[in-house]
Structures are given as C-alpha cells and as structure tokens.
Length: 454
Image (cartoon, rainbow, N blue to C red; front, side, top):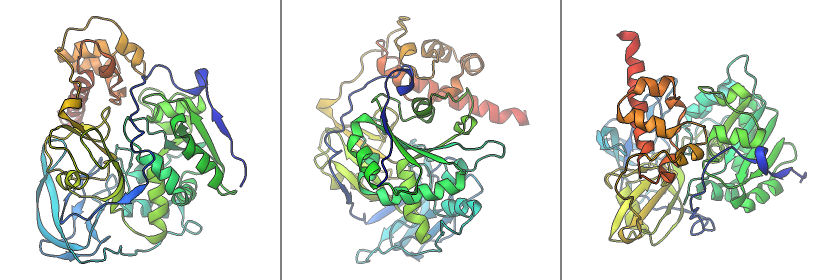
C-alpha cells in the first residue's frame, strides 16, 4: 500500500479557535465491535425522518412486505424514500410519537417472527459506468441521509452548483460528541464500504483530493484506514487535536485547510464538500446492490445501561424495546437520542430509532449532576470564549429573553449558530442558552417563511 500522509496539527492551522473540552466518556464502547441487534416484534416508522418533505406512502394496511421493499417514496427533491427494515405485515398506518414530543404520520410494521430477513436486491449503480446524475439518483433512491445526526438528504448536499468547483472531498470521522463511538467502529470495521463510497463521491463531486479528518483519540482508526486504502485513491488521512465541536463542517474545514466558510455560506463556497464517514460507508454498501437503507450503527451507553456497545439496529426499532434488550437500569433519569451535547432528551420511551439516530445515552438517577438555579448573566464572557463561531451568546441570550428576534438575526448572526451547546456548557449562571437560540431560530424561520405572503 502507498504511504499516505498523516499530519498531527498544532497551533493555528491545527484546529479552530475557541471550543471546549468536555469529558469524552468513550472508553466503555470504543473497543466494542459492531453487533447485530435483535429484530423487534413491532417496528414503528415515522414518515418524516429527515430534513425536507416527509416520504409519501405507497403501501396499505394489511399488506405484507419484504425487507428492503419500498414503503414510501420521495415526496419532492428535498426528500428521500423509506424502505422496510424487516419483512412483515403492515398492522396500521397512523400517527406515531416523535422525539420532538409531537405526533407524526407513520407505519406500524409487524415483524414476521420466522423470516430469514434477507434483503431484497435492487438495480445496482455501477460506479464505473454510471454518470454523476445517475449516482445522485441512486443515493436518493437508497433513502440515504446524513448519518451524523443532521439527517439532511445526501443527494441534495452532493449536488455541486455550477461555477463552484469542488477541490476537496472531506470525510468527517471526527465524532467529537461525548460518549458516541459509532463512526470510530465504522472506520475500523467497514473500510471496504468507505473506500467504495469514496469512489462514488469522487465521481459526483468532481473533487481531485480526499481528506479523511480524524481526531487524535481515534489513532487506531487513522492507522487502519491508511494501511487499507487502495493505491488508486487520492486519500490523505489527517489527525487533528481533540476538541469540541471539531466535527462541525465549518470547524473541520478550518482545521484541515485553514479556510473559513463565510457567514451564511456553505462549504462549497470555499471549494469543499463534507460527508460523514458512516454516510460514505452506506453509499458504498448500498449502491452496488441497489438497496435501500434499513438499519444503522448506534452507540448505546451511559450509566443507565448494563450491556453497552455499538449495535446495528433496524430503523424503526422502538426505544423501549432497545432499552429492554441492553439491560437498562430501573432508576433511569434521562435518555438522550444522540449525544448529551447536541442530542435531544426523549420525553417518552415510545419513540423509535430513525435514520439520524447516532446514539442512545442513558443516565441513572444517582449519576446525573443537574444544573442548579438559573441566575442572571454576570458578563463573565465564558460563553464568548467558548463559541467556535465568534458569536456573542451572552448578548444573544439577553435579546432572546426580551424576544428581540430581529436584532438577534440581523446584528448578532443568530442563524449562524449550529447549536453545539458549548455556551450552555460553560455558563456559570446555568443559563440554557442553546435552548433559547433553538427556539429563537425557529421563530425567525417562521417569520421569514411568512414574509412573502404577508
């Protein structure tokens, strides 16, 4: 194998400015191989599992389906289809609970208990003969979205605008979120899928260089990808210092290239396309077989879990069933879908695993250090020092309190915030800044959407 470049960056070009260093808490699962999870007796599938328009049903109640069969088609360009995670019978089509605490249209799929659960083969997308547009169509047909948590339709993200050439294809293997080790294990165990995915991505983006960004706490993954990379791929592995939120697209671009994405801009504005490493592996795994995504790797960990690990779990598996199988303790206090920094707390256990679920972190009652009373801002500027985007969270928090959303958006760049939670983490007054910003951003978006019709 050709020697690939590995750089451990230090100083200005080694990372981004500001950021924080929360406890990593990855040791209990980063050495545990991916294991297949049991098939739940009942699968619950929300039609809205991604940013954009929810999928549109193509099946009916009482219908028997095979694993991998199309259940709902893409409802527009910014949408992806939904495939059956198991072979079974559609018990009913009705509203299902979601992580946001609302009800949403979905499918209740009853698993056939004695099925082999083989996956249907589709029409393969040949990386050597398919055009860039055909590959994009294949990615959409496979129902692939960003598996790092954002769940943005991947085919939309990969569409490079005319006049904006892509110089770097960046694979995001940072996984800076505490507790989560999903991407770490994917890099160690699914390298063939990753490199096949790279071939598709190179053809789609037109990039000439590939950089795989990995944090220094995953040195074994960096070494493994270096050792197994095919000679004909222009791959460079770069190891960067451990810091949160290094895995954000803008932060990663700065760390790896020194370039800064402008306010309101996209990675392609500085010649980059960034794709999560697990998403890349899914592209490489599914497209050669023309299959749709039915499962994903999820880290299950925390003080409230007895059998911690990384599991390949069918999408739609109910959270309650998952916790039963991994031995959740009786005195559960909090359950997060995703990590504790950017994940969302589950209001109930009746929700299910969706495409964007990268982890389930469960805390027992006696292990949670709850924040105390919320005090007024003391102008200490800890949040300003932590914010990786150089925003002023203190000022934004005060404006949010007085509901001055226009000033937040226009003068203080509220919409640039990607809700990493660093400001809330360091605030000595326990002000829930990121929650304020999340609510404020939703209000600004609603106002912007209403403006053309006003």
